[in-house]
Length: 269
Image 1 (cartoon, rainbow, N blue to C red):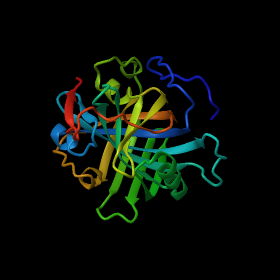
Image 2 (cartoon, one colour):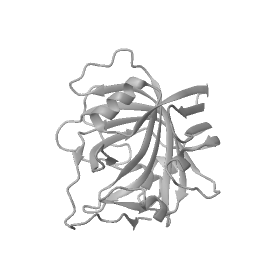
Image 3 (cartoon, rainbow, N blue to C red):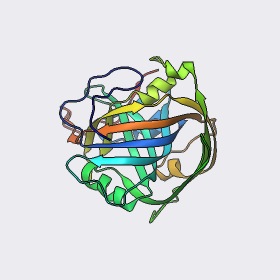
Image 4 (cartoon, one colour):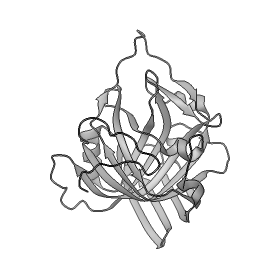
């Protein structure tokens, strides 16, 4: 993927300063989301972040897809690293000092050991090697399987999902909608090896979002991070492609308070 001037498909946004450090393309994404107790999620966040809520709840996202066109700036393309499955567990947060909206990554599972090493080394991502399979059943229908290797807790995820095609509602998503809340994020937050909170600017180019149908056959991922999901109907979206540009990680500026700032909740919608 060559470097170019890019913008999101929803609305133009200035690119972050400097050069991106990594880009990759995500394909055939299921964006599955559950409401989660905001206080429960807040306890899992590192210092400097607050839960971003919509409709009075935090949201836990589980996103399976497959990756290709991985590129690290200044590093030759990885030999033998072709398309591979990946699975993200995340929630939505704001920088407590600046209010910047972003994604907090609880875990990343990948089917490529080489990709796991690269993402851990260059971006401190909480990346795990997993046994993974993604089978395409039809043009927009997929079966996804992931079992984390060498895990102390069960971390199994199995799902069938299908995109239902673009709609005008999603193509023209507006601020204040759930889909806007979940996708209009320009920052990634993670905890580094020493427990400090770091951030990386991100820029995404998303193909038209679609409604989706899904059957979650098994999902241990929420319990693996200590979140108990009440019985509920998840919200599902599908996207054909997502180009992701990631800028270098940087340490968040320390807050002026002398002690650790407790994680709090910030309502959005």
